Image (cartoon, rainbow over all chains, first blue to last red; front, side, top):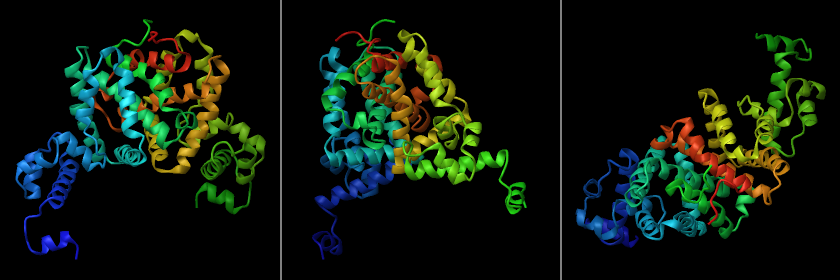
Length: 204
Length: 204
């Protein structure tokens, strides 16, 4: 009998790792069933049978909890805030560098590939990713830069990064699979700069 | 008994639509089993039990036959040649405009989504797409522009277009799903220009 089984067998409210697992389990169910926007931390707590304060104790907000349900143990909202806080003239390069840094370790890369893959074949997964990107990524870009069309700009930037993931890690186009991180930052940095804040590109 | 069955039952070499179907069927099998590079029109003719001249009669080369096996009735090699033949200063914009023109009709869009989807979940499909892109897309870019790293440049351009397909048609990110064709040409044109020939971007 494992420790966890023993705790359950004695009918005690699960503590520590068990509470954390129960919250993660409830969160996975809720994100899949209701999407990202309609899932609340309070609802997850209720579903998991724990006090809402415990959700906040174990997870740093909804975005971080969502990332953990996808086995990507990174707080995307925090990453994006850190990226947006720096010099706007290097924004595009900083995004590529930061995201490659997060993605390149094989275990995270596998989780990312699984996420993109499932969003291609499941409307449920596509909806979660769509709502998450809109709220936590494009919404934050909109709040940080003063440019018009922040939702379209954020979506265009995301399209380049999604395409990079697909071409480099999934289809494994040789030139991209073999490119160094530095090459990718140099080539894709100005693209994100253009998509997000219009600089980086020569006038037509 | 269908006409095709009747023809087969009488042991005649199939003619017209039947020959065409037999070639397509053999081509699908060969591309899936051997990948794009190792498939030959001669091998397909042998597999279909027809004269190699008939393959050339019905299909305008390997790239066109490949596109037909994917239910995308467009000759990609011809499209790319047409695009590369124009003014190099507008290359990026021309590519986005041409490809959106090809993809936007719903029946082609569905075939394209099916292709991207299957390349995400099947190593066989990923290999076909990878080899096809390398040979018919990046190889032709390399032959037409004098810039260094044509394989990497072609792959980067493809990554932006693949990401656009995924974000606009599959994940359906609202800002991209709702964008007009003109908006996409205006925003993504300079990105392809940068990826392929380095102009379109301001120096850092």
